[in-house]
Image 1 (cartoon, rainbow, N blue to C red):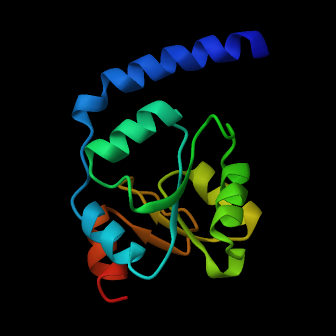
Image 2: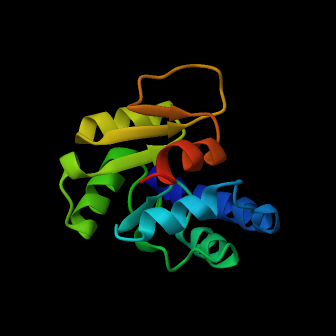
Length: 146
């Protein structure tokens, strides 16, 4: 129902903006972003709205790290967001790694042909190319040595 979509997304925006005060970076996230962005272009894909995403990135001091940001206004599906990011970065799928935390992220990465690194505290073992239980573990074991 396209006529309801805009109203529903506005309601979601309101809840996301209300939660802005609680936004925090996980331990290891800033270290990871700084190191990964040194010599590589990073794009962000998110199902958050553009308005709240911009505010969160600014609040956390990471708004300049990403070359491109794609939100639910660009697409409500992850795979098209990833394709947009590849185009914006002028990157090929074989040279690109997507880092996410959901099975949907994994499926989207596979559909686009990307390597996929999962950061997921749940005790399952999805078939990601690499799996870490926290941002700190990701930084210590994957990023720091790169």
